Length: 190
Image 1 (cartoon, helix red, strand yellow):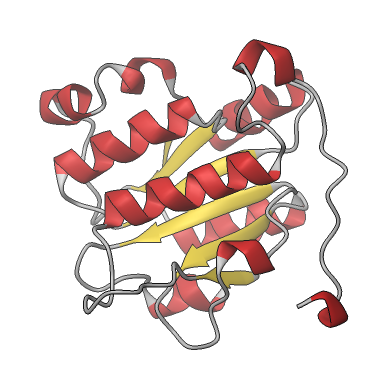
Image 2 (spheres, rainbow, N blue to C red):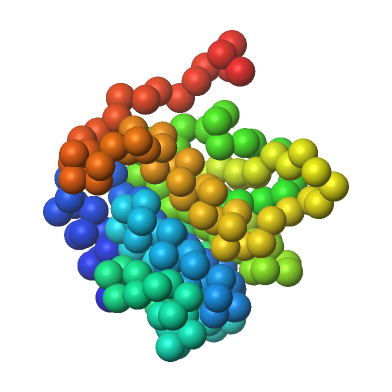
């Protein structure tokens, strides 16, 4: 698939685009699990850089439980340049990040045209990719560990975006094409 194919899919569904970008996620199990969650959450397409990210191998297909067969997957030469193109299409980019300035999902407006970026299993988001994000998203932790596995963190964030669109608790067929009226909270609401 191409980036244009993915954007056309969202347009045909009459929904704000929901995209998943994988910044050098390499483990086939993580890629597969993210594809599975992406399909379950109504993601219109997944974008992978040509270099530094896993291929769609039989191991990825197995980990995705076949969801990879139902997802549009675009390979791009340069993820940062692709992010610039997405911004020109009015798609907001939210990167999963551990930094103090990153906000939890409930403090961000995820009910918009959105690209969620999941970074590498060990290094996280590359600096250039992180710098191009409009929003930084973190998952608050209660325990002693500082982070979750890339596939788990990405899955939680995808579900938060799906929930923000008003889909959680409804059958997919009942909500396809409906737009949520959610508004960004004002500073006084936070």
